[in-house]
Length: 264
Image (cartoon, rainbow, N blue to C red; front, side, top):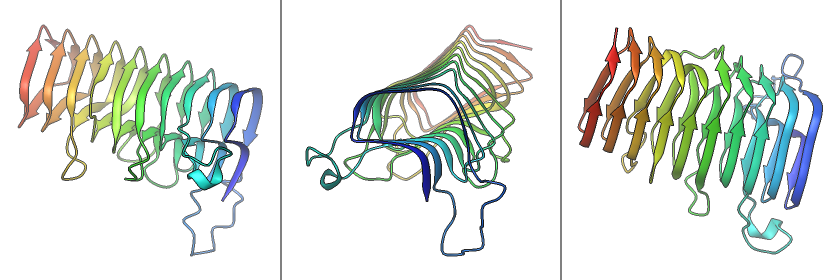
């Protein structure tokens, strides 16, 4: 495991105008006791008021940027500190082996005006992955993803944006996405609005037996070769979307509103 820049248990940090290059192509993968997916460009833990801006991050064996908490014994205040108030903007995050950005735990995180692309090497290979480790102390809440370009995702799954476990309140808007938005879990609200989505899908389905998908609004998007497929979702609104070579399908959903969508 390695990290080029570690931001642990601190406040008020700005990292800007740099180039971080990992060892993806030269790394020794022969040690079979490791998956070699824990090489990070920037690792943010138990910190607040952090801005990552105008950074180029590539060739990590794991993630370009990872965001999570620390156990209380590893923080200066001897209690679990949630990572919060993080801004990631104007970055070029590409050719990393596992993820572009992983959010394992954190709240009030804005990801905007970035290019995230060519993520390939080991699963999930998502541009942005929100997934806790099923720990009661971990939660992802109040995430805004906007004005990003996401493309050239290598895996067959083409995970552009994924939410998996203990995820609350996510807004995804004004992005250009070549790939899939996958919603395995959303516990409060998710708004997917004003995006251009190509060669992908908006999919909500069970990721685990107890997973919940509540209050999803899909509105004013343009979808090209990208279906909207909803399963086991409550309080679902699909409005004013333009669909070209795309369809809307739902199954086992409750309280659904589908209106004013155009199809070609």
